[in-house]
Amino acid sequence: MHDLLLLIVGAALVNNVVLARFLGLCSFMGVTTKQETAVGMSLATTFVITVSCMGDWAVEQYLLEPYGVGYLRTVTFILVIAAAVQFTELTVRKVSPSLFKTLGIYLPLITTNCAVLGLALLLVEGKMSFINATLFGFASALGYSLVMVIFAGLRERIALATVPRLFAGPPVGFITASLLALAFMGFSGMATN
Amino acid sequence: MSQGLDRASSPEGENTIEAVAKVVAFEHGLAVLEPEPTGSCNGCMSAALCGTKTGNTSRLLAKRFTLADSAGLKIGDRVVVGLGGGSLMRASLTAYAIPLLTMLVTMVTIDQMGGGETRTMVGAFAGLAVGIGIARLSASYLAKKGDLSPRLIRRAYGPGPGESCHTDLG
Image 1 (cartoon, each protein chain N blue to C red):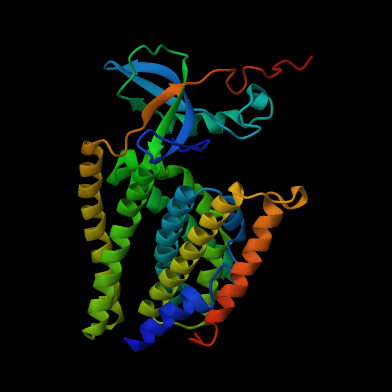
Image 2 (spheres, chains in turn yellow, green):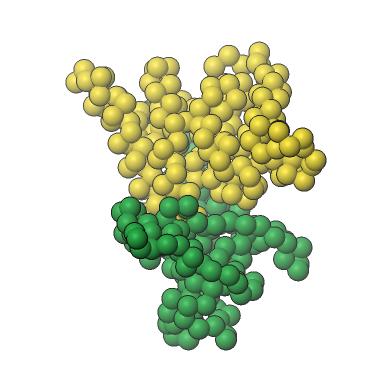
């Protein structure tokens, strides 16, 4: 249990997918102008990352590794991610059409989020067990969500502040992101995974 | 519905996510609305010329929704509809957090009981299926309460996307 907790803290905070690994920066800058949309996108991404990590682990263990076709990894993982997104879209549509109408906009965006593919490749590199791979994906996605929500809150405040004209918009956003990354560096040393 | 998001405060003080939609039909006395596309290319009538319009239209058809308080509206009217920010958050939590949590709890429990990799995998998928069932019940409860339904904020004025575009090549 201790190992699992260490893995979760390491993936979510120490090696944060956005601020330490620099993955998923497109949605980090694009969907964080409003807190509600950031939360919607974060939860959808968390679900897709966790499900696709499970799928990618199974494909790697039962298909790519036994048959020695590791060179097809990237292509196969992209296929698994697209399938995970479709599965999520179908599930949400079946669970509640009202939910689908409200949340459906975020789902196609996730297929092109490089964090999903990056994490799948990282878990293969780490030669993890099934539970470790799933928790690694979930914790990394949790870290992604945490950063998205914090950054959206900061941007909402910055939008109301008086900013020099040259820094208004994305420039001040990037400066804020760099300060946030510095703050997250404080977590390094807590865990090594 | 969340396309072209804009945010305002409702009279109750709750943040509302707003979008512009157009009345396209009436079904059982309720107005059927289609959210307006906001992309710079897709929003223009000349999108038909660059071939982007067909795919976008089919996507918009899937996003049509009904509005309960549609008194006084007629086909072609443009209106601003709103959804509470809290509603979007509740919807997200219901759709994604419940299935994920049941899946992870089942998986970790089986693993801690020494279930082995195959049993953990089967347990994870069973937990996911149970979670989806719970999410479905929760979503129907929210829908009955009207938490997921957009409401009419005001009429939208000015030309809609494409109405001021040049559609001819000449």
